[in-house]
Image (cartoon, rainbow, N blue to C red):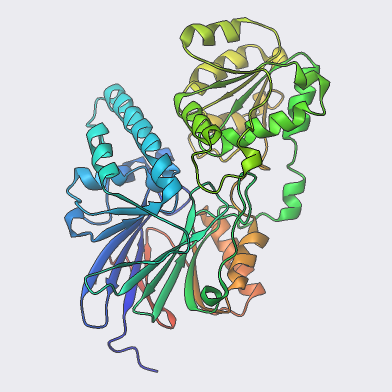
Length: 464
């Protein structure tokens, strides 16, 4: 077997764990042409990785030929404006829904960065002007409709359906029809708001290296069954005349929580008469977009997902009125980790009224965030609860099932998870498949991928 003259891709990750997802792809074609691209360029949300936000995998973004985006969450797209600020002049390829949703996320990020830079007295990472430049570069694509990159159109890109989020995609890259890589992004096989289309059989038959997320790669579906407590916690709190605060991610999670509340209203008398409030500009904006029916693929019966007795929080006066009023209520607010948005105001107020409050988290809280601190502090265990049942990430059986759909997997790179979780998932994949080449993506490691899978382990090498 010879690989001389065959194309390969150096896959270089900037992230080591869950947030800040950023890949540099150094593609060498068989004729020697070099093409460089980024797949995702996300914000690091863990304080211990915060300095990484200033860095880029490529010193001069002008050298980039393209940018691909898996989905709208800012830990995957939040630093794309930084590429433009530092000289990138190319396009950003994404799905149509992502092109509609991403501008709001990036403008919100620019606002947060500006406020934070002022507070800490340091230079802002990027501004609204860089977001505008990013939007000018967006090129939306349909699922399962290939497009081509490179001067000779040698790189074929296909966005594949993904249940993680409206607009989310897995990204298939075929280099000269020989070297194929599938990036799962954040992945799930279903979503309450839309049907997830099957992967075409001809794609499943390709020889492929899969770069697979592993956020919950150490958690089984059976374990999830023991974490289903959202409805019971909310209903129990309201029966005790408590108010409920639900910190939630603005996109996807907020809308699903509102839908779940509506369904609970149908069977719970105590919930039916309880007022429901939504706070946080970004969550309100995304809820309006969902409700408008403008997004592709949204189930027709899911457009009207809002609960009864639903109100929008319009200003600080209304917030003050809500926390001073002791009548039971539900407040859904950003941010999901409690680090930003109105949650910063509500959480301390709810903590002051322990006997009258429930704070129910519904998603991952990164190390160093307000949410993580509260969930780990025993003194708040009676008022602070959490549930993993909403996660838009598949558990290990779901991820393994995705890998097993492909009939000719040459190698797997485990991505996007805590260090211990990635190690666990690597062993799980090895035990349940015949795949021999399984590695882990991290800042310390890069991999050269060719026609037959992983060719070489490249320690801290970017572009050789």
